[in-house]
Image (cartoon, rainbow over all chains, first blue to last red; front, side, top):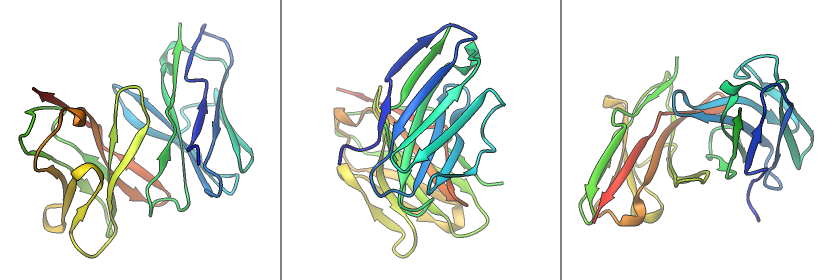
Length: 114
Length: 111
């Protein structure tokens, strides 16, 4: 298996622009997670899905953030409009079970909003 | 509320020396506990996990961790550090559908 695949690896955008991050989980994993990593706040869970259904989005910072999972092999995290404080590394992870086996992480998307 | 504390932000050890990275957690029930490692520019890789049973768990790359319920700790150890172990290490606790991560400990290795 190729693991969890995220794209793009790096994204630089101007404030106010829409940004879309993409994730392909490991085939057969029922759970998909989006995390954000910053120096100040560490790793924060934004949202997670079970069988393509959002289960907990309480970590989504505000309405500018949205996430979808239209099928078992694809998820997006969208920021519209983007702001400089959104600059961070965004990780996608997937697993068979929510917290019993640990997650497989993608390599992340480094987002810079200027 | 559940939480994970890694008290050491940065540790430097000499190659060949032993290593212990500290992790304390706050959780109301028997936790699932994990250690992950993150190399620069990479995602997190699972080192080891504890669910139940033997409190000393073995992981990949020669790492082990010991669960101590009385101290709410899950410290990571390695008897002899290699230069390739330089990375950031994260402790995590499984809680109601997601993992809560500590802030991480950055490990530097001196030649």
